[in-house]
Image 1 (tube, rainbow, N blue to C red):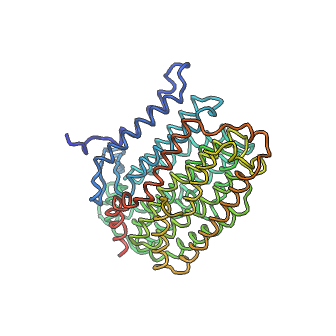
Image 2: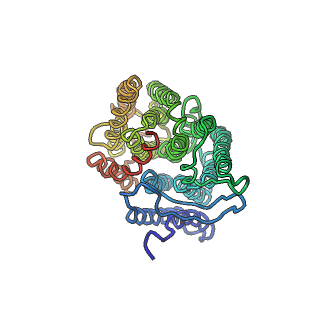
Image 3: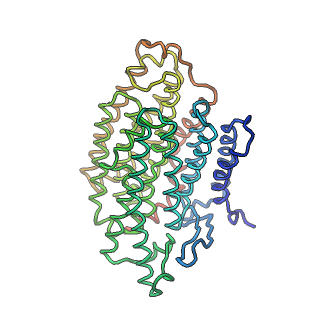
Length: 497
């Protein structure tokens, strides 16, 4: 049996789902965090095997698995990854590993439930990147809401954590309605064109739907429905209000997942744009408008913040505007930059939120009024925060620079005006981060909690070193990612020619 015939994607999924179940079976004396850490280690090994067996010179899906799920409706358990999605598997596993380490001593009360929900969340997220059947994708999409609701409402950092969790869940459930309707329209269109009728002619298979033409009106309807479904999770203005609220009220480590894995933007790339290419190009002004508004609004709002978590939430909103502009170019450079930017979120934005989690565990707050002079007692934590902050600004030799440069170059060619907005937003990024960093970490120590704070512990240091090494490596050698994703990105861009 060839290595590519092994069901490694299913094994990776089951590793996290079964790990969540095993936590209830281990004796009480064994800390559940150790089992969660072991599951993450096995997840990294499986991701490495998937990467080794992946042919980066091929544009199509690999590691495919297909089993009948609901035969009468032609719905399948179908998994697969291509050059666009495969790198998100190790990015997801690595980010959840960081969250587990960041929650090492703070998952109280009920640590067994906490780590079980965390593994379920990781499994659902991996399923989103693997699914090649639209209804299976929708299943994972909706399942990811359940563990997150309980994680945010039970272990949140603020008094409004239940409200924040409920708001997020209701917004996502509401956005799921147009998403599901869009997938149903695609399936009915295939049944109509195939002449097989209902229900036998229905198809929810992504690769089949990509080959199925659509009338112009149906294509516009599908694109708008899918855009509405994904916009809330991007998040795009004005559907963004849940993100700053959750960043302040929810668990800081869990906020790293929301900012580090932009599932809504991935959905636009994977489904909305390629399934309705004509409508996407016709309505490119909508993507460009959402991108520019998010880019500038997020940057200006970040300038006004006095809390590190709130600033990072609005900075994330600004940076995802760059991704929308990259998608709206519908060219190879733009989509390469957008995919690399999304991968950067898991390292840079995720890393910054993990650092704020470490800071809050020590000081009890991430507001600048409770900090000041933190670099004197926590030089490692302050140093990594500065490094990842500079990376978020797009400094050369970091992984964000080639991603932002590709998006900037493609945007200036396709949409010169919005491309200039990118340059302005980069200036604002330096202003809001450096000003808040100066007030939070530099100067004299003025708080007792800061004076007695401990610097990064060994386990925290190792995860930050791993994130920083990847940021530097991909900044020095961006071709490691760009050449890997080029065939799939070229095939994606080719649908808009």
